[in-house]
Structure formats: C-alpha cells, structure tokens
Image 1 (cartoon, rainbow, N blue to C red):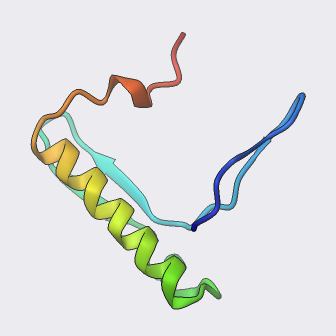
Image 2 (image 1 turned 90 degrees about the vertical axis):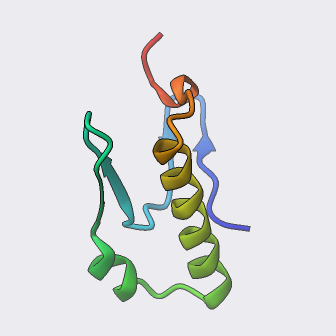
Length: 74
C-alpha cells in the first residue's frame, strides 16, 4: 500500500523512503541514498513497492515521457 502524503489544512506530511532519483538534462539517472533505504525498518511488501515505483519512474524518464504533472510550479 505504501505511504501516501497526508494533506492537512496547513501542512502536508509524508514518510520519506529515502530513495531519490536524480535525472540530469542529458538523461543520465542516478539513484541516491540506497544505503539509507536499506537501513529503514520496512516490511518486504513496502520495500518491493518502493523499488517498483522507482523502476517505473526511471522508465518514464528513459522513454522521454512528458512528466509535467510532477512539477510543483503553478
């Protein structure tokens, strides 16, 4: 199921699963903080879901899909 963000009246909170994907303008990708992810006390299902989500995101970037929906800009 994962850990969806919780939206409050004045606060948005979330549980950081430590995996970060850095994508450079030339398309190179680097996964950051895998050591922190490995150290988190996660059950196998959550760990698997996080890895799958990361793989999906990597594939979207690699295929050059339009990811404008991910921006925070108005």
